[in-house]
Length: 177
Image (tube, rainbow, N blue to C red; front, side, top):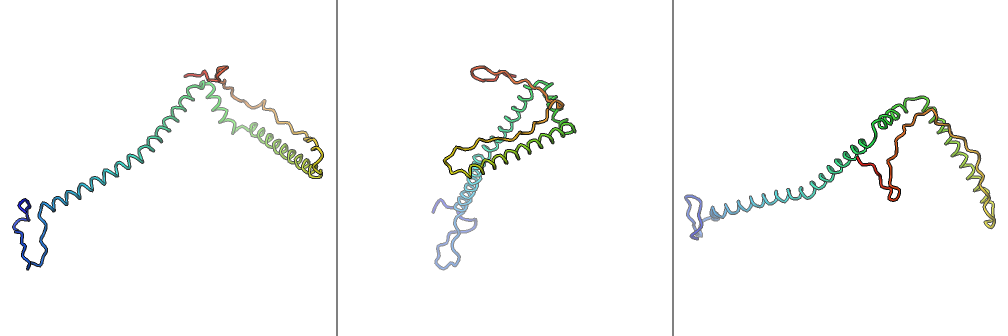
């Protein structure tokens, strides 16, 4: 007990008649406080490590994906000739506003509906003919009705974009910015 210090002005009393339990020495209280402080610091360090393990990789992957997408977009924009990209943007912007183009799209959709209806009718007819068979005879030949012709696209301006040259054997693109 020689190395222990006690609160100021108090002496260690071991008398059996005292009702209050003896207080621990100041050095033991300081050691307990130090242990609690280190435990708190360790808990905070563990939380920082957990954030570093879980959040940082996801943030790195997300930012690298965005950076690569931006670089790919820049590459594509740089490889297109300026006239083709302007014509494509003008054609895309003007296609929705042109009544001639809208009329052609309406005609094409009507022709597609007629073609689908004719194919459905032919399939139903074939199913009826095959259903009456005993299964031993050959299937009847399928005769499709005349399908409507699609309207010509002579009046619609379609921008021409040259395709990049490719190697005859490997198929690798020769377009290098």
